[in-house]
Figure 1 (cartoon, rainbow, N blue to C red):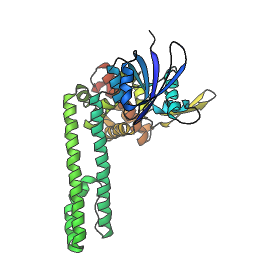
Figure 2: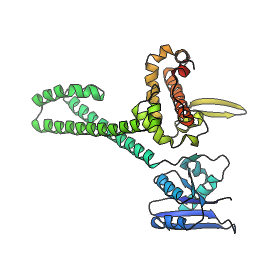
Figure 3: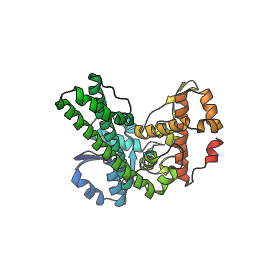
Figure 4: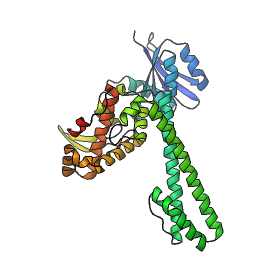
Length: 339
């Protein structure tokens, strides 16, 4: 039995639906308030529901799945070309419905509640890291104005900061010194908050078999292992490791005409946070002893610039991660040494 396809343009309050009646063939459109959506779907036969993978989509997807419907999430980038004329809720719903009918359409895996929780912890930590950098840069800049130089880097700054504050207390008015000390306390509070989130992520790593398996890979630590497992959703959503690497922007862009195709730099599409973690992990591998003990990596560094080699190792990391998760394997050092 072929399921009826219903597209939803989700929003904060008003949801726009678009579908084609299977009996009459007529195009149907309907607006629903947020409180009406679940009741409306509860009274319908199982259908294939299409939505953009935007804010709240995974939660709606989980609730509709529990009702017996099939749910597919689409990347907003793939929906945009099918929006006709003016951009309205009805036009967006129509575009979602049209995109879902295309041959070879790519769908986003619906994340579980646990995966979304882990990603939320990562987002909170990333925001705290940005705020801490802002606070330390402001502190460094203010002291620089009075001839007190602090080193770059968070750990180096914290090491030199007590002595710098002593010098500042001898030369500067007390009202400024007190304000600087308040700034230091704010930075210490952020450090404690970041450490608390990292402890929770470490607990998740210990309790999740997939995360523990990924942590055995060189260049993959606590942050990368937990972020990959939570972001990927399901490995089955990707055909192979190259498709996963391409989804986070680690595959090269291509341009060509007349049958000639040129490879460009990495596309930098998809999840920038996950791509950054993998690039950091790849950089750690290139800087380690593996650069001399692994022949393929040593040869790569000889014939390619440093940053290109780092991107290539990050791509290899992404493919290896997908293979381990999709096939239930463990990391084998011999496979990487002989690659």
